[in-house]
Amino acid sequence: LGESIRTRQSVAWTVAKKLPITIELAGFSLLIALAIAIPAGVFAAVRRNTVWDVLASGVSLCGVSIPNFWLGIMLILLISVRLGWLPASGFVPPTESLLDNVRRMLMPAFVLGTGLAAVLMRQTRNAMIEVLSADYVRTARSKGLAGGTVVIRHALRNGLIPVVTILGLQMGALMG
Image (tube, rainbow, N blue to C red; front, side, top):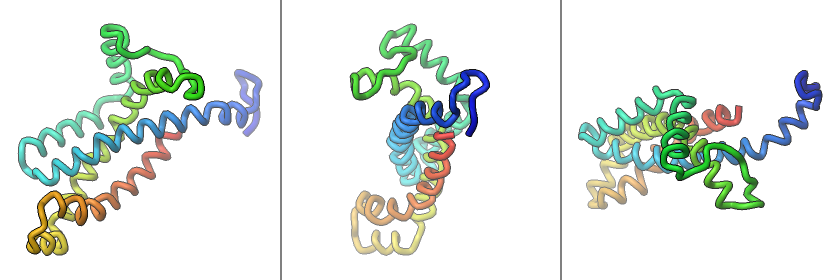
């Protein structure tokens, strides 16, 4: 990869040095995004055309529209400066202090995860709406299975296929 003009060090060495932190941040962002997007998307699909669906769509639109740098600055001002709940910057390796590592990763991971969660929430909702109208889901309901069982056992498995595809593409974007 050559040599850095600024630091005069090997670019491969510089990338290798920062790669574990990048992977940790991307993984943490991914977990936050999945924890928000999948339940919200499924709930919006199950409660289609209700206030919850409109609310999820609005939150998804805001999540895609708000720039990450602006959200990051606002969270630093609110959570770090004003409330003092989390540190504004820095990195502590997880081997040194796991709690301090999580405290410093939480805000940047949340900022990166919101945009990803918005995309995944919308995709989950759309995929679940399509799957919930499939014949096998109607058959499961007609057999007397409870609504939650139908959604979790039958619809969610097939509804997450396009979400996993988007997730793979977004993981590459998080690493880039």
